[in-house]
Length: 365
Image (cartoon, rainbow, N blue to C red; front, side, top):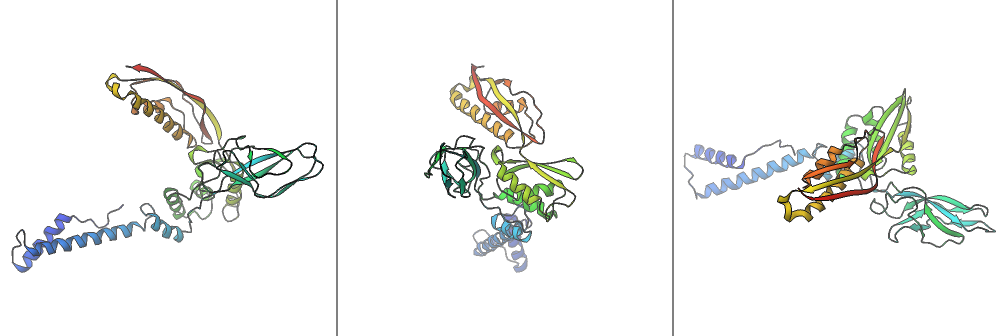
């Protein structure tokens, strides 16, 4: 926080004592009860100064806490984004040889683990000659844990029995689920709005409006492939690839007449995937003989930290030396990396780990 009123407590007390002695022409020796009174007044002044500093800091988006951000958000018409439910497309396979249509009610639930459920967003009547139907399903609870990044084919359990349906399976990866917007993301959007971003136009303006669609959106890159053409690539938090439902919401809201400049054509897409692998050998110094198992654990955590850092941001190049730094900081003595190799990742792309991670411990050295 900014310290607008800087007070040194000891100096304040000494100043108070000197002022009293100068005014009364009396010396205040140690143990004098008037010294204790001055100490009390000085403490009260210090507390008041802290309260003033705190209050002034709530007027700035860079230092405001939750209540302060709430006021600033209202002033700049930047509401905190609520939690959202994840979306996924699910294919309902129908029994062959049916003689009549099959009705799949709205709210029909499916799951992959018996704990996290998705429900059909609308009722669908499937004609007798149709083998399957794809229906958008919505998570039954808000948030990202357990609802985002459920890979295609994983949601395969029909919870609510529907006559004529023989199997279910999601055709894409679920995404769009999010918790209530975290304070730092909200702070960032308030700062963007303060720059006068009422409509899109500049790069920051487009980023502001796109991130305002859903708090699950983590990274945005704006490209200008041609005159009056704006293309956005978006990536959800924790490296989750957005699904078609989220892309459609972004396109609809940012293309609105009160957001998009009349001369711009706006489009949005998921990032291109650049696959990479991780394969390395490492040693541990003999001086760490009693910490080998701990360092092995730290090596695994360092790999996960590196993977998360690379995959959570668009346009992050794959650089083996970056991985090496993580491993050395985790306690490795020497590191020989076979994969990944240096790879440039464009702004419209994201790196994704492909296959298993190979970590080979070669003993002490």
